[in-house]
Image (cartoon, rainbow, N blue to C red; front, side, top):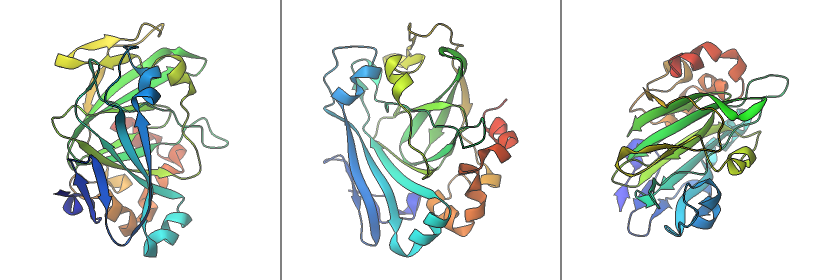
Length: 262
């Protein structure tokens, strides 16, 4: 059993043998949703993958009861995801991937922020032409290690890959007022690039156009209350106002562009 309190400031543990997160006393929520290999098949490069049967695990809407009201007032939801290390066929184990809808009355979609609690990750960020989802305008790969915060900017879809030798445990803060969108990713069999064994990166031929992946590092974003090594669950309650970017991204586009190195 691996203790994760120091990295999360929550009473949670990783049971690596059972491949599950153990949620301790004082926490509520955490409803478990499991992505199976059958769920993942539409976005894999190989149509005949059968393992791992349970591909990754999502624990939705975790909170301390006494802090629930602050989260409601700020439309904030906190989740934890567990992604085993290994492969799906010859691809590194990954999430299905999704886009976010636009914030009402704007042309800017909702963002999200992840924190690597344990392990390491690659976050694939894909921006497509709104008039043609088969044309990719930008494809960034954000590398993150334990303690890093990875901001998923507006108007980018994202996929998480466990590229480490241990299970990946990550948390996220997201606005609670929307549901993720999966349709276009399913139709196009995943993102524009597949990340495979031995650092092979293979283009998804269903996309008409896609630039080569560009690599960036996850970095602290103090304006958003995000600092490397400081658990963001705790940071949220210290200064909830700094997390307004989750619901009002249109007011913070300059900062998002700095995150993307553009």
